[in-house]
Length: 424
Image 1 (cartoon, rainbow, N blue to C red):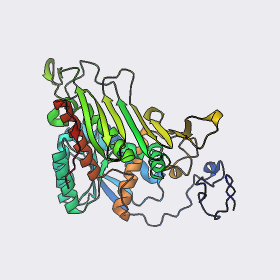
Image 2 (spheres, rainbow, N blue to C red; image 1 turned 60 degrees about the vertical axis):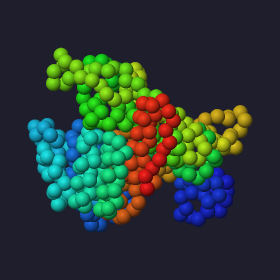
Image 3 (spheres, rainbow, N blue to C red; image 1 turned 90 degrees about the vertical axis):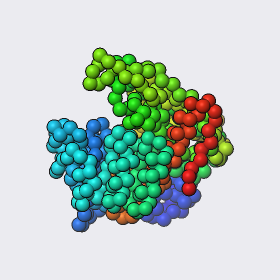
Image 4 (tube, rainbow, N blue to C red; image 1 turned 30 degrees about the vertical axis):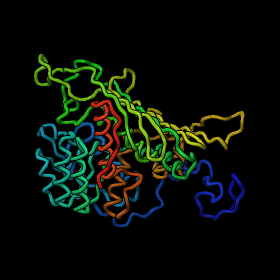
């Protein structure tokens, strides 16, 4: 068979050309390939226990329920066994809503249940360490929402626990599982950008602009560890490490714009906000690149505005979360002079990361579908022993992320550059 792009001879069953690297499938084949050709045989079940039923409880529950339909045949069929929440009336309703067989109000009931094989920890940040360490000690595989912990010391303890027990562990930086960002990772790994010069990322939201927004756990340091830094900044720190390599140092500023908020239990009274509302950092990477990181929850009009850009000696790429099915790329040696510039790539072809399991090209997926990928990656790792790294973040990544978050905080407090130092 000849490659239709460069006419090189390629094997009949090859998915891409060994010379030019381009896909060999016929245009439009995705429209006739949605039925599975695989025979399922005997598929095992795997019991899931989830701690938390709010925003993330909804996201993860849908991910586990949807995963077998998309990744058929799945490595195992997730059985939503038990969900935990502090309010019995609410958790009972959410158990019914998402299809859990049981519910409880004490997270220890999840840990102590010998039937449960994967624990999904979606609690406030200050509860991550205790729950995950207990789960590891019980031999449970663990998915923990980001940030891994309120600080790097707790994150290190969590990493030690999962290493000692030998369980599988995933820190859910779900943007790694966006097909467009996964493609960016592949392009950089293949050297398509050459030496990296710049990395820049912003993550901007607006939900805290209202001064009457209550003093919830998300704006209290003892429960969240930090504000914009850990809440959304940790996402772009993870993307920076994943795409550009380890940071060497940071120089940062952080700001709290509204210093008091109404108490949820008594709106007539106010409590102190002791976390950052926004931060900005300059970063130096070990590979010599420089970059910027900025996150804020005070940007009117920005609903979930994340933008990532990488510039190298051979080309550049950028990604916009609010246009998440596209990756913008530019390679200096590939364009004619009259068409030079960025190209908008629709990352929905069957050859793109994750997409062979989804829809025909052009039929886009959404933000919540990254949790389907989370569920698949975790279950595949538990059942088949496949590595979660480097496409999925582990507790090692969560720990390193926490070290960078701590350095950003310290730099903003001292006004001085902070070196990034990981413990061995």
